[in-house]
Length: 118
Image (cartoon, rainbow, N blue to C red; front, side, top):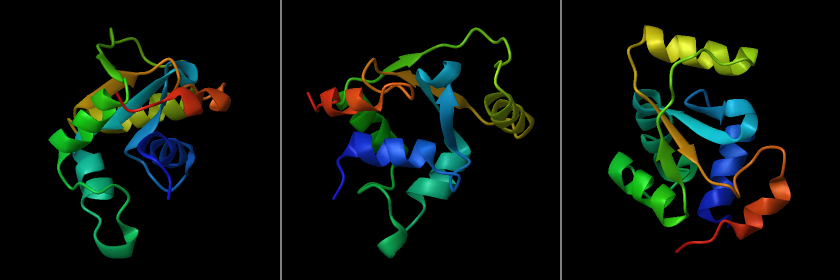
């Protein structure tokens, strides 16, 4: 079984999930909170991704693995997929959460092994 950061990586890289995507050119994780609760945490049985169905518990896991929440000063993203995801979330009045971890970077997948639980 994959550890938490590996599951998260596969999810962000997957076309299957619309609630999480790379932001800041692959340096940050963006989460559409409402859609994430429904699309990811709401899954049961064999389709369940994480052990929890609770958003607070999921965010605690992010913190345990060294992710820090960042505020975005709102200028639209340069990349089209990021921009479209942010537009869709904004039109649904969802909250988008942004998290940063120096070892969770799309351009440097080898750093993922440094993503350790505190």
